[in-house]
Image 1 (tube, rainbow, N blue to C red):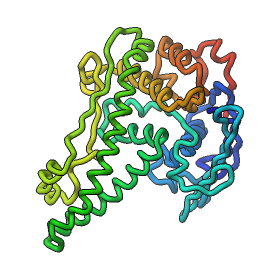
Image 2 (image 1 turned 135 degrees about the vertical axis):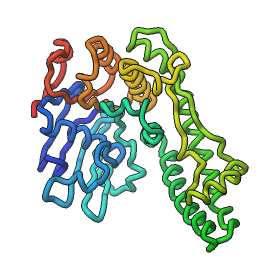
Image 3 (image 1 turned 30 degrees about the vertical axis):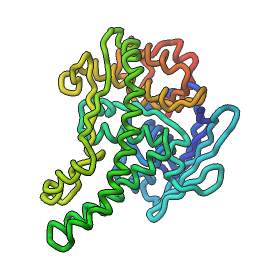
Image 4 (image 1 turned 135 degrees about the horizontal axis):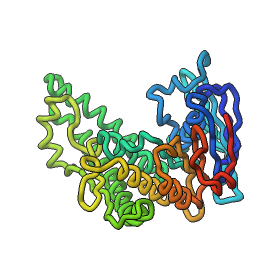
Length: 346
């Protein structure tokens, strides 16, 4: 894929701005000028969620109650598509080639891989961050996965309501059977897709890590999934009653990143974190690719996080992709990289 143009209207600090990237595009400017806002807009058109804002209302420019994003991009060149979203206080409308679509069905139409400094938390942060990464990656690849995930959380909310009513003696335990059956079926499908993805990643992570770090160490991802079946769901019932929620299932899944069998989330160095995340993002780009159709790679202010060797390997490994990166300055970047890049100064 190649992003041809992006228009931001009332998005963050942009009133009306047209961004036209090239194969390698470097957005340069001081902190706070709006570099990351451009990457945020591109990523928003992949997932229809911000990777920064907790409240979607915060995305509209100050004093405005709506924003619009519109992008044209190539897929399987020379084919082109146009994707857009309009959001105000009451609605969010998506269009693909001018036709209104369900937003969930548009997720992953424009595929992206994002690498931001906070991504180091995928390794050493809370389990929810690793599940979020799993879900965002799979949602772009598999529309069925996203449908199952959305439905899973809907069913779980209904189940939780029944659990609370049972705990307060308003409902009978038997009322859970209907929701349990759906939850288990959806959870099984979600788990299967997660396991397939992790299996694919584990086939390539070690090799990519070696290219980046120069070290012959075995990197793989372990799944930390508790058994989720009718028997184990029944066994968790007392805990559910106590907490008023569903205490077992894919919404509690976790991952461990192991380097030579060692949990680097607990014992790794910052240098190892950087190399592991780089390897992870490269494998993610390959996972989201379909033939020669590859995702757009977004690098948000990570140059300062990487030493010269890692920067060199990064550009080499992403040489097949459209790369859009932000940086405060280009000092320390290779001359041959700068020579072939389109540099946009804000």
